[in-house]
Amino acid sequence: MFRQRMFLAATTLACGSAAGAAIATEPLSVMSFGGAYQEAQRKAVFSAYAEETGRPVSEQEYDGEIAKIKAMIDSGNTTIDVVDVDAPTLLQACDDEPLP
Image (cartoon, rainbow, N blue to C red):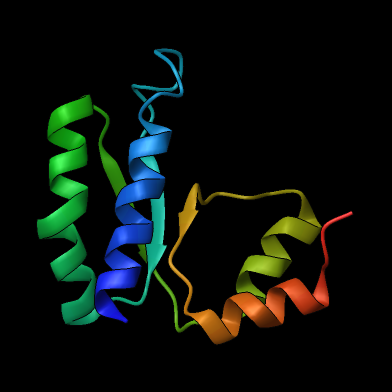
């Protein structure tokens, strides 16, 4: 499970690095679960991403509840670029808001 999350996070960050110079100076905002888990992400992924791209990573923590993310989307005020979610939360979000 941990390896899957790290792979997804690394893949997401790598894809984002090709977004262009216009956003390269703005921090990449990442929301994750905090604690030792997020510290491991910082050491393994976030720091390397920031060093390689020159784009800082801004971190936020959440408790895994989809409600906070949904509220940002519904209000039109999304402040997060990348959210680390576990599989059950992802499935719940897909069931709640299927893609068109």
